[in-house]
Image (tube, rainbow, N blue to C red; front, side, top):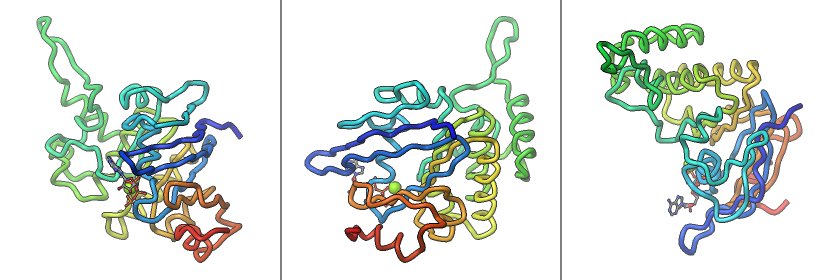
Length: 246
Ligand SMILES: Nc1ncnc2c1ncn2[C@@H]1O[C@H](COP(=O)(O)OP(=O)(O)OP(=O)(O)O)[C@@H](O)[C@H]1O
Ligand SMILES: [Mg+2]
């Protein structure tokens, strides 16, 4: 088993509040690590320190042999780490193709002037989504007009298109209907089969047990425990979330 991500002693202070203290864990190739924890436990803060949105107060993150600490979100993304944030980082007014290429737009030159190649981006977006079993009724419609599940699927398609080696998802199913939740869970399985490492943040115990190879429970900014799904149950995970001492 190859370790792709090493999170080592991460700490984050916001003013006088220590949101995350001394969090360490690894992610292996093709493995789904679930970060579980109650509201305010520090889950989103941890993933933002991996994706470059926040710089840690202390600690380091290694991705393969590269130190991520100090890098910008763009630099982290270009190394093959795609993050799907809780507040969904899609541009609502753009179509799926433009969203797929956000920040890496395809252009073509006509008479020396550079134009966005919308048609080519749309075509590629439809292809990537088709390969994932995602059907979007009108690929030229802005994503604002799409359902939560379709939007989530586009964000995941983007991760696959750029051949992410690690995909981080912060509550990807929280706002979705049941069929869309199932779709996202199936996409996670497909990503794992491709050898992609996944960090999934979820409050939903059935999702946690279905997707996780390992469950890491955060409580008040610290790791309260780590379990394989086969070695634990709902009750123990909830107890750890509540910060019970083990
Ligand atoms: N930008 C910020 N400035 C100040 N405090 C923050 C900031 N972001 C998070 N916090 C605080 O850090 C703590 C952890 O927040 P975080 O968003 O990481 O929790 P979470 O586990 O993702 O919770 P949820 O499940 O509700 O999304 C909270 O007490 C929160 O108020
Ligand atoms: Mg959060």
